[in-house]
Image (cartoon, rainbow, N blue to C red; front, side, top):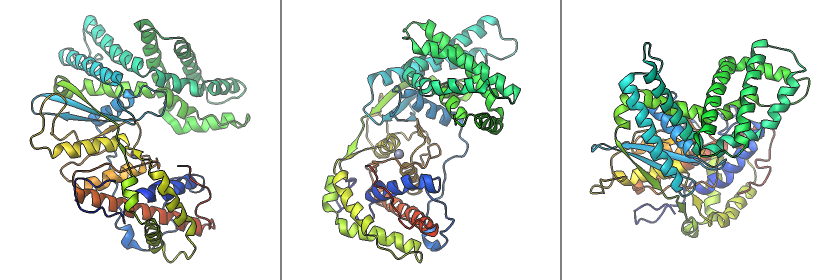
Length: 485
Ligand SMILES: [Zn+2]
């Protein structure tokens, strides 16, 4: 278990893993139907301010810059599988003019991802050089030949991204294509906003053309990809017009669907379809910003992190599960007192049952793998300083293909609070509880222990809030179904 480098005996009492993977996961599954989001709000939970003041402040950036957006986009376009693949990336600029992209996925990194990132960097670098030379494509008075070479470089970047992420694009379109077609047919029998109707009709026509391209085998030749890039550009334009007033669009969609009694999530579907295009735009915006030109001029190296499975068995062997369960429940009780007196035998039993599952080991979430990597390399005084190896601190933002989960978010907060030398940020968390989750090994046992304790307390607090809400609203049974682990 996460003992770090210290030889001190591991203090399991405030370990957050069992609490998160059993009780919090189960509670968050239940809460979706009852209260909406995790962690629960504090509507019925107003006592013990001492515990609440121990919560960590949210400090993710509410607005992020082009570099951070580009890193999120880069992480997203690295994924080449239709679903289930997640990626995190960081960028380190060294004093000897290297740029290192560290990549972690929830699997070992495929060779094609490394090739893709290298090609993408070269292509973005070319674009950045052209812009530095000519100015932007929309600069007034730009000679047609220069405009044309800029345009073709924009298309080259996009074609590269689409070729690598083709499965992802296909998955997005085909997942709800039949439902979308039915929705468009149903629209014929309704009336309503003319503008929205005509924008949507045009979007549908473009999408039909894209579906034709995606439905047949796409050759490595550029003609199919060129068509796809052009159509996706047009589709993005149409979607921007539709989303100008998204609330109005959603109201209109709901009105249209009332007579047919169906619910098609139009906005969600369209956003999913143009997601890769949005990522392309973020990468192009980064390359188009003059102050980033020097970054793209550097020699780039990719450091692929092997996915790490952490074995939880040694830790579990040293845990007194009876005592652990008693302590965790006692803590939640203390926090939510005086709300309840009830028998917690079920929860205690579940904690104990989970021990056998946790023996299997859990895969590190990619953002945690990157955090742990930089945490380790920063301490290397005489480490390698060549190629993809460096102990320089990374850019403060870790890009992720998906919004980080609840536990990752809390870990980053705890780490930032204690390891001030490496204040790493990520995009705002989805606060979804994704299990199995395991904390990465950190180089300093003091920081690791303090992070474990912060997570443990926050899990107790949020779980106690959940129980208080349930009991106050008459749902006396805190856990209604078994969590599948
Ligand atoms: Zn996570």
